[in-house]
Structures are given as structure tokens and as C-alpha cells.
Length: 586
Image (cartoon, rainbow, N blue to C red; front, side, top):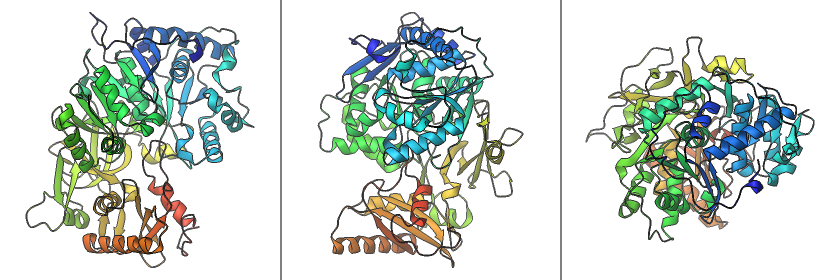
């Protein structure tokens, strides 16, 4: 049941099971999918930060141990249908506990690790809010966090809380029948930090997404092998590199997220060593690996097996991908294997994929027309400013998208509006939050994604989040454009150093630019403020207020993305600098 019961691994699980054809998530439940996967040789392989194989968990073993744990969970007093919070460490205990919940008819809610929450108190408070939101009856975490888990559970009247060790002596209870209509799990959005919302995903919704994603989006075959450092508490890690591979009987090589942050090239080394074919990352993951390759040797890397290099979880940074491809071409990597895609937890995971061989293709449009007229008109030689957006491919089968204006009218191709989607992968709703669900999910099944974008030649293009859009003097300005431009053009800035948003100063919308600054020299700080102010005034025609903040102080979501909403809230609260009186700040 626990890791200490696992013998020292010798070799990872194989990529294929000879003579066995793949099944594309053709099951009623996740438990049934594991029953089928257990008949083969594939499974999960967990590595340390030194690249050592520390745990091998074939699907056959995962099934046996999960069944045992499932009976103990019910024997310890839990009942089918109840929610169980699971701190999602990248280890075998989490995998076993999640699958045990499936067999027991319990609803697991993967919860984040402490990295993104600024210390013990902030993490415990956030964990507590998530447990309350899930109306959980139990909370489990790894041994190293047992004290924190118990503190988060204080006063919540949970039946069980702490580490998994407490279940060793629990009696065994009978398991319930499987129900394809039941909830499979709750997925907390990576950005839901102050008011967490649990996305309720049914067994049927997961299977639909895994089926179309594997068969049509990725074109998975028996020869595929996955490699991942993505956290299991984020939908791309949980669904893309735990549940989808399980439902398709694929082997997965797992590098814990914290180890990737320390040694990002180890991600590429695992792909090279085990001949991985499918691996995804937000843009910042590719950038971390690229940056480390500037000072570390890449001799011996062979990335020629990598056929689907996905980009998701955040806006795609084309320049980062171009540099990555250029750097690793000599190591067998081809730019054509990039797979920009679009999705969200509210749709289980994926909604659209680019076709094989397209790569990260950009649509270069006239930036002025985009800002003034909300139209994505291809740039010409007379365009004074241009903007490139990456194509995110076509919708998966049985899934549909519409781009609508503010009145709900469906817009034609190349007109920018709010994206609505519909299909079998959509969530049941936000758990226990009927009002919030009704705000985004219509009675006829259309989900308001909150994203802006347009279609061109049938492919979806994402331009940003509606809530982040800045309206200044009749212009629609995308904050990521400003952030990326400053980080690319000002040599002292790094990726992730800049957060841009607007506030109402009582007279007009004011554009605020928070910049992480690493120097204490007064002259250098003043010079940086001057350079950034001049840059935005000259390049973008915008007057801005530049505020320098300490290194590593800009907040991130649990998946590592910049959180503009939290940055804005911290600014208004005066955390970064004494903020002026701002209308509506209260």
C-alpha cells in the first residue's frame, strides 16, 4: 500500500505489451480502465532529481494495491460518493490513493503542494479552503506534510486526516459496483486561490475526453511512451499524464515537479533515455530547459523519438519555442513536432489540437486593427504594428466552439470575441456552487470559457483572458503582449518578471506595470523605471505607472503561471508599494 512496501526497482516498465492492441479509453469508468491496463506490462516509473529510478509501478501492481487500499478506505468509515482530499505528490502513494478512490466509489480531489503559496500559513489556509469547498470527509498527504495536513484539518470534523499509514490496520470492506454516471474526481482550477472552485468531472466526461484526445488529438499508438514533470494537481498533469495514459495502457516516466524546477534538463534526459514520444509543457518549461542548456552540457541527448511536444496551460510564447527548436535541432528535435492545443479543467482537459507536422504556426495580424476594431486582419507591409498569435488547431470530434460578441451574436472568422464551447467532455458543474456554475454553463450546454479569440481556416486562435483585457482610450490591449515585449527587449528582465494590469484611479484606467528588480542600487532602479516607461510610451503608445517589486514576489498559480488577478489585488492592498486611493478598491 505504501512506498516502503515496494522493492527497489531495477528497470522501468516497457513501452509496449507484445501482441496487445491499444484501447482508446473505451471503458465506463477509470477503475475498469485500470482493470484492462493491468493485463499488460506497462505502467508508471518515478524518478528522483538525480535521474534515478526510485519506483516502478506496473498497472498490474497498481490495481492490486489500489483494490486493497479501496477496501481499507471504506473499512475505515468512508462511504461511496464522499469526497477525499489528496495532496498530489508525484509518487506512487498518490497514484494508489486516487485509483483506490475509484474502486471505492469515492471522489478524490487532488490538492496542490506548498510551492506556490508563500509558506506554511498560506498553504494551510488554502488547503483548508479547498477541503471545505469539496465538503470532504477525509484528507491525506505524504509523510513529510503530515503535520501540515493535520493542522489544515483541525475543526473540520473529518473522519480521517494525515498520512496513509493510518489505513494499514483498517478492516476490509466490500466494494460497490461501478457507475459510469458518477463523479470521477474534483479538479481545482490552478487559478482558484482565494475562492477555490472544484470542477466536477464525471466518469463519462473523462472517458470522452481521453478517447478523443488520444485517438484524434495525439494519434496515440502502441509504440508511444509519455514523459512528464507536470503536477498531478493540475489538469494537464492529472488527465494528460496519469489518467489518459492509464486509459490507453501507455507507460509514463515521471519526474516530480520540484525536481524539474531544479534540473530542467533531466526532463529531456528521460525522453532521450527511454525514447519518450509524448510530452507536454507550458511555454515556461521549454524556456527553463533552454536557459539551463546555456550553461550545462547537452552532449548525448537524442530527442529524435519525441513526436508530439505539446504546449498548453498558458498562452503560447512563439519566441521561446523558436529558440528551443533552434537550440535542440542538433539533438534530433524538430520544430514541426510542437503541438499547440487549447483546453481547460472545465472541459476535463483538451478541446483542440493542431494537426501533425504543423508545429507552432503563427497568424501575423495588424495590431492596430485588432485593438481598435476587434478584427484579426492579416498584416501587410503597411501595418505599423503587428501581432503574432499561435494557431491552436481544430476542435476534437463531438466538441464545438463559437466566438460571440458582447450581445451573444456568433461572429464570423477573424472577428475577435468571447469563446464558448460545448461537448461531451464538459464538467457537470462547480461542486456545491450552483450560482457560479450558472454564470458559465448554460442550460443548453454551452460553456463560457472566459477566453477571447477567433477562428481562421477552421483553427482556433486564443488571444487572451477576457478578464485581463485592458481598455485604454478605446483600445483593447492584451497584457501578455506588454509583458512579453518588455521581457524580450530590456536585457535585465527575465521571463516572468513583469505583470501588467489596469486600475481605475478615479479619473481613468491606469496601466500598472509591476517589475521584479534584483538590484538595490538607487540609480539602476531609477534607470529601469525610466527605460520601461519610455519603452511602453514609444513602442505601444501607452502611459504606464512602473512599480518595482522584490525578486520572486509576483504571485503564481499552482501550475506556475503568473497570476495577474492576485498581482492586482496585492497592488491594491498596498503590499508592493503604498498604493494611491483608487476608486472601488474597497
